[in-house]
Length: 127
Image (tube, rainbow, N blue to C red):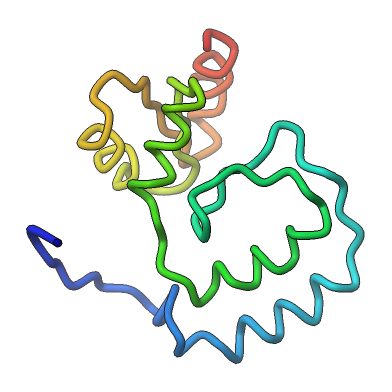
């Protein structure tokens, strides 16, 4: 159902079966950690559904390495849950641009370098 396909210049084959060895290594590290229930629940890109159960977090993080990203479904779920403000953390504004296409009403901000910290804090506080 895709309308367009664009090859991405990336350094590794993220979110596909080629990352299985990395996922297994991550799983081995994650099972040694202790997680608390997530509050608020986290909408994962594996299921595009809220999860707050600590026991499920290691498996979901491991699966995220090889599973397709369900970004559109994830954003739609967040909006259905009442989320209206999104802060993109990292370089660039690719996700904010995608978000604008999914829900034009959403409020978006970016935080990529420490000089933008004050503006990001203001955005979070205002929402």
